[in-house]
Image (cartoon, rainbow, N blue to C red; front, side, top):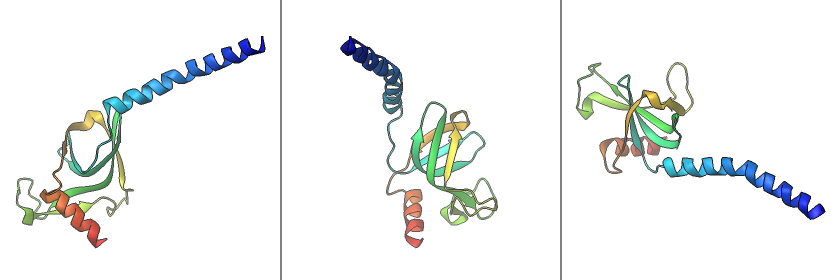
Length: 129
């Protein structure tokens, strides 16, 4: 009788944990860990560069975040000399270096080449700090 109670308890524990485990495994399959730097393009026209540390069906979480600030204020400027890469966190409201973005606000995400201009600028900024 005691073995039957223990067996039933173990079965109930497995049944209780199985949905949680299957959800976690599904999340890993649908949203594998991303390595390197990414550009996240938002519906409001803003673009953030950095690491995608976590994502699910509703959100993308970024860390080590940078954005481009145009020096002349023109949105049509395309030269590197007219733009500077700004590290998130030094703004007036002093945000932490983490951003949780609602997927509905994301147009698309691009992986940046390690030898591209933005990735090189991020690496140079890290070397300075």
